[in-house]
Image 1 (tube, rainbow, N blue to C red):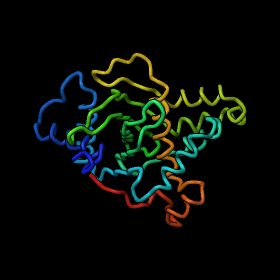
Image 2 (tube, rainbow, N blue to C red):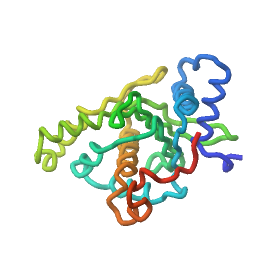
Image 3 (cartoon, rainbow, N blue to C red):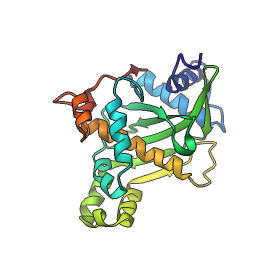
Length: 233
């Protein structure tokens, strides 16, 4: 049964169950908070776009993985150009390194009518008996791409030469906030990397990608931003 649905779908099913019950999300369960939030976004601001690694758009994930290997100084311009037209988008992919064996869902929600302002949630877990189970409690990263772009403009060439300047610019545009029931005791590096990877996926999708494989996957006019997702919730 675990192969019949995705981790993202199992999350949405749990959230939909909480909505149907018309009950408050259980306190102390940040995953339930996130699942309910995503289900509400799908119900009120549909469609909620779901894109999965191994699906019909491998170029998106291939290009994001390539960019993830670049130095931060080289990735900042792409992150500053991150935009999202939909109210909510979910990316699902396999964990690597210390997270191997887990499935990752990166959910990007626009809290306002600004395509350059995003709330990023990461859920790390597995499917068990058709139920989504998390192994790392989610937190919220608030990312302001416009603020990052303004900072890059002020710093100029210093960002390209200095990793410290690049890190400072990114810190100015982003803030990680604990969710209800989640004790913030420091963010593991592997989890922090997932937040930047989620934003890289969004920037690649919005720009159509820089690689030839990405350009081939997108339309001439819209790039990957206009591609058909695997599913809408």
